Length: 109
Image 1 (cartoon, rainbow, N blue to C red):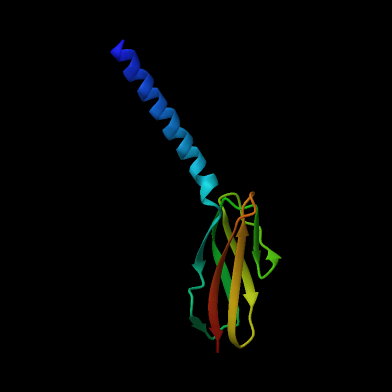
Image 2: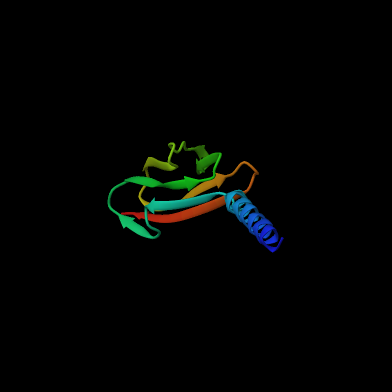
């Protein structure tokens, strides 16, 4: 009988652990990681590429314009910026309506 109880407790711990492991991405919301450009970057070129990865998103936009990530979540968009300072805003939304925003400031000389 003690072996059965131990087995039952172990089974419950495994099921609860598995459930938490599967639910964690849903609970944590969308995630954006920008690989370029770096914040505060100064460039002489007016052509800049914004690139990165997005996880758990249903909508991704750059300054309100949609961006489509590929199957692995990577995305890239080439921009023509005017001289001076620019603030780039990237917003991601998950299927529950939660949003996360990343901003980068770039200076074009």
